[in-house]
Image (tube, rainbow, N blue to C red):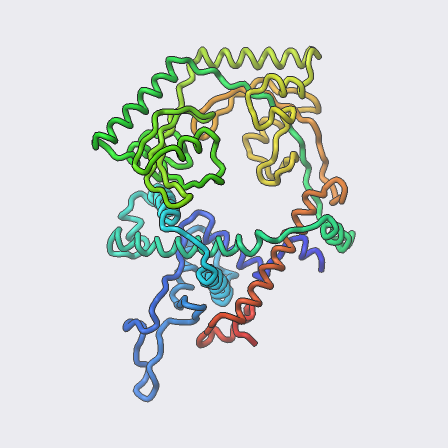
Length: 477
């Protein structure tokens, strides 16, 4: 039925997809090591009258070996994360592992680049999370049954590198897939009326933001502190990475010692990129300002067009007086709109401090869909609380917002449009329908890729697993 297309069912069934989400969602994964086929400890005698057999090796995909114990590890991991393995078969897990191995194998064949720096950055971030969840590095090492932190890091590095190869290969397959308006139209026409998807209630929202103005005295405090950090690092009193972990207010890089890797095409604010590419290897910048606060940058390595750096972000403190001034300003803006002196749209364009929404009259863009609609059932809970009770054209009272880094701002919100729950309409819901059509086309591209690569790759499955009913043609029948 075409309804299966609407649900975007991939070549793996829903149970396997559930396993995939559980296994990879929080970043504590149990993947498989590449194990030499001639490893002594994998061979044992079964019977004096029989040949030696490889114990535990159940499949091979290209250069990757899969052990029977790898399936056990995956089942244990699902259970450890609170998932149920009741309806998951060993054949399904093996099929998923083999898919990942084929992605990784082909990534190597296609010379997909994954640098050690990228993997190290991933590992630092994951380890920080794992230590936070489990309690200590010693407990993490014990959980994975390794003898030392060094042994665990080596093991985990290989796992993450394989995961990165897999994800980069997946991106490479689908990045070239595009869809035309005609294909979207044909996709929609093929859906029987009874199977048309139902989209939940949505709304379009606009906001005006006033950011508290920070005093020059607070700015100077931050600048002086960053200069102090620079001096201490240059004099050998502390490492830059340690300073970043302890003091940086950038939640995206603090846990990894302020680490970023970038080139001139990487999406960073202009001021940050200009400073980063003006430095020599080993040099530390003077404090400089962006919309996020004040930074210093330390360039660790320059490799061709890529720069590996660390940075520390400090945000000047906002005083109670600064906050009151911002609240008074946005209260006045709200009053002028309520008194019909100015429209919300014009006020946003001329008075809002938020660059991203100012030019569009304050209209918010949904980060998940890149359009202006927000589905009520999928809204961030805090955002939902702020807008759900607003009537049409009603303007909220001033709301104090604080982002992850601690920056505060005042805003007022209004609902500009409401869309009730409804059956898909081609004209009204074109963007959503296009997304569904594109996903279907991407899944077909992935399916074709598997069919082609399985034919050209050495694949072997041993023993009882040859009787599995795989989604992909691993047995090349």
